[in-house]
Amino acid sequence: MSAAPPDNDVLWARGIVKSHDGTPALRGISIGVREGEVLAVTGPRGSGKSTLLGCLSAQLPVDEGEVWFNSAPVHTLARAGRERLRRDRFGFVGSEPHLVPELTARENVALPLLLAGAGNKAAYTAADEWLERLDVGDCARLRPERLVQSRRQRVAVARALAPLPPVVFADDPTAPLHREAADQVMRILTSAARSHQLTLVLATHDAELVRFADRAVALVDGRLTAPVAPVPRGTTAPGANGAPAVTATRR
Image (spheres, rainbow, N blue to C red):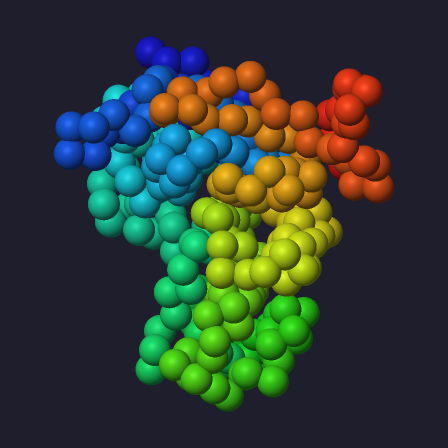
């Protein structure tokens, strides 16, 4: 019988293996994510970051190993159970803003709240608030086809945050954004996570975004390597004199 995951880990995985069409993507990954933590998963393209988020978020079944959410096994769930878990407990932002084309931005953001049983007034009020926070309040009544990609991505972020799910998975969420907009979106994502005690798992190949995380790990060829030390906000990265970076502390 396997050991139970630690009580303070909202997500916990042990020895997970996943392949795509016979090509190994994850090779025995074990990792824990604490409740309320902002964790960055870094690594080059093709290193397994998206696959890891897919396994942790119940989008992908693992080939081997265990995945737990709040001390309940995810790896034993059938497809319907994984779908309910994603709908009820997780938020997700990808590198492409997959919005419902027939709905306005406001309706897209309100949709997960309505599916969870919220009333119309509460759902649309929350949608309006999050669209304003993401600086796309003026897009509320527009459909995705009338928005440029960067604005669609902000709507997608608002949709993921509006229900305040216990865990938000963000897979390269700033890919369509320029640097200033990317930093703004990351500030909103991380401040929302910390103020509402949400857990945020971020996959990125952009080293600049690691500074927003409490902790970072690196993937190379489907294996975890040495931890990455984020540079705390308000400090500078190590310079040519070789001064060491300081690992960000938990908040």
